Amino acid sequence: MKTAPTPHVPVFKLYGETQHWPTPDLLHCESIPERSRLHDWRIRPHRHVDLVHILFISRGSLELELEGAKQRLEGAVTIIVPAMAIHGFHFSPDVGGHIITLAKPLADHLNELMGESSALRKADFLRLNQPAHTQRIATLTDQIDQEYRHPAPGRNRLLEALVQALVVELSRLTAYSDRPVKRHGPRQHDKGRQHLENFQALIEAHYREQPSIEQLAKQIGVSSAHLNLLCRQLAGRSALQLLHERLLLEAKRQLTYTNMTVGEVSDSLGFSEPAYFTRFFKRNTTLSPRDFRLRQMASNESAK
Image (cartoon, rainbow, N blue to C red; front, side):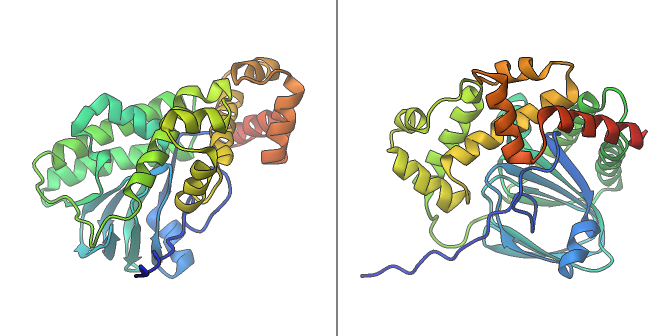
């Protein structure tokens, strides 16, 4: 008996974008109207393989679809969307608030700090019925937005500290919630998702060594061909692309936030020669490492 095909769910970096993570930061912050008005206030169901969303809605209403469950929400509310969770939104035009997107390395770090109590571990929403709770979340969200948009010395550390404080607040608020979002219907590709999560964990632990995909697949217990198939089905990229994206992210961070030479960055990321690193970086960004650093410096100066 033939089974019905699994509906295709788009995989995006940020909604509507398929390019590399647009910043050397481990987080991205924007107001909800910034992106949703470009799509007539409707963000259709999609997922991210290596991003976590934190939404704070301060006003307006929305129809939320999260892991197959639909809910209409009004007023102050927070929404957590972990990696791989299918989610969609239909906002009212008067919506206010922000969406903070965490790259997986930062989300994993916060989950490790918070343990099993971390609010980032499950897809969920929480109505903020008490003004004091709303104010605390709103204040932290505004501080993150201001720091993100107006770079200053120590920006990276302060952003991570503010996000950590936000996750602590959200974890406290959700600690007594017995309303996790339930998926509708049977879970699809559970084993495949677990293999992908294991692969991402191995990337995070070993990307500086630039292991082969065959080596990583062997540690997971699958063939490299099967691993590639899973990555393309669930992440929309090949296994090698996922490894290279993590290398590129770290290269951008080191070129932006450290005084390491291009040669030192190259060596720290496992390249045998700086020329190989330069070719890798330029192929993925169209800029040489030096030109990328100069552009980041100019951007930071203009933002002061």
